[in-house]
View 1 (cartoon, rainbow, N blue to C red):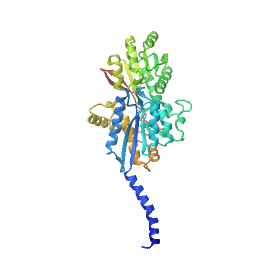
View 2 (tube, one colour):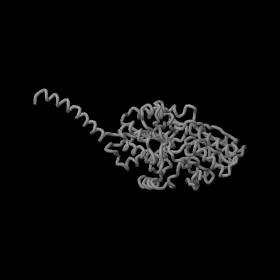
View 3 (cartoon, rainbow, N blue to C red):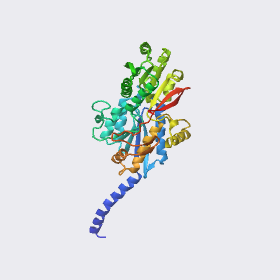
View 4 (cartoon, rainbow, N blue to C red):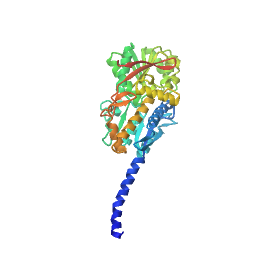
Length: 401
């Protein structure tokens, strides 16, 4: 072979080798999913079941999609100092994920305030974020939050944030409607001064007033206080039928229940989905909640899921020898949405996965059949109400029926 022919063949073969190498990598590379949830503190029991749900979805596909290996990283966005999610830790998690080129999807956050930190960081990186639990409306819905929301979370001008759970503008309204159905005439509203808690309390307040329920108080609390006895004294003097708390287990919903009952309040107590976990009952003491406490939730509790949802719950119990907490199914749903989007994606990278997730329509999920709308919200609007009986949550009704 002469030198000229060798040179020509070399020029031809070098690009071909490059193309073959690229194809081989695409068939055997790694696609990484990370989650960022509070794994330190009392939320751990709830988030552990979310993580279990994510792992179950990955296991179901054998840890691979179209020949790509699926890697999963469980990140903690809480700090020991706060015992809850920490803005600095959430920012660090989001930045770490954004810089890791193998990461193509971010599951989180659990708290809406944490989402405000993470979304713009991931948006700049073109990294899709799917939440199992954020319910603050302003994260996605124009006119439902502050004046600059949600565009402030979209510095690239594109939508990268999606959620599989209905929002508080729906839950707060249905909670007030339920209060009306329960015969409530006067309500005292407390909130934890956080994005989620104050937001849903405000929605509840507006709807309650529109229904003719008298709001005799609307106050923020110190969620780190040792007790709320002075607040209970004020509440008792105003004699409401109901105390509504916009907040979570981690912002002291259980202590409020204790102080209401020990202080002699005989009325009803209502809380949102941030308290729909066994940790809330444990913190409050079952005797302070039984048959007089009401909890709203964006969806159905595990025992009321049907079809694929019932199959998930059965598989969960078999695998983990325990019942799933309320948001376990939502973690599973997030992972399934991402995995199916990976399979449909035109390119197995961030841009391809983001585009495929945005196009999710008529998804056959554990929460029935639903789609993402133009804002990144689920089309599902199912809300349910529960009470506490015998130290356990007990389903009461689908709200709005």
